[in-house]
Image (tube, rainbow, N blue to C red; front, side, top):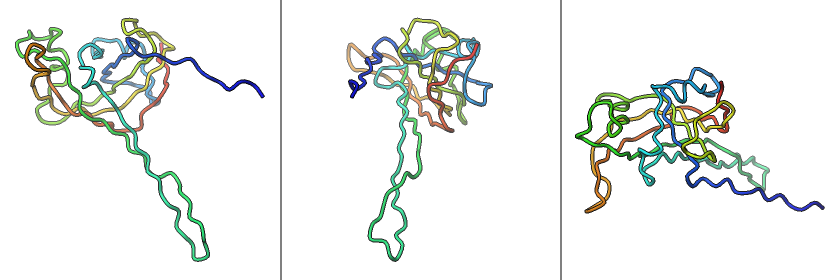
Length: 181
């Protein structure tokens, strides 16, 4: 028998990006390089706090099969899957000049009545300062982002301005989807 497989770990420390992409034309959720890097997109990797970064979840229920009169055994099956969003906490400077780095995400997601829609893309195992190129893979989540609330992150000497918002996953995500040229 051959030796069991043991893949090398895909280490993510310093090798992960979260990118907000407002629009993706492809029905398969495969963004083009232009969509993922254009002026409307924003890499939020160094804006989101590590404990407030996007952390999508998936929950799949187990269901029991209906017992028939003569059955003495009951089995389980896969039920519904729910994809969930959560809170996203990011750096924000209330005194920041319009369109400056401390307010870019705030301005992009500023919405008083309603939500901003788009896509959160998770690029893993590529050095975070590396430009997106065709052929790299992303996990793409269709999202709706609720209003942001200004606040603070940290206490005392570590306190800094922040904002927090909720995000919801609104449709089937696409995993390991290649960036198009």
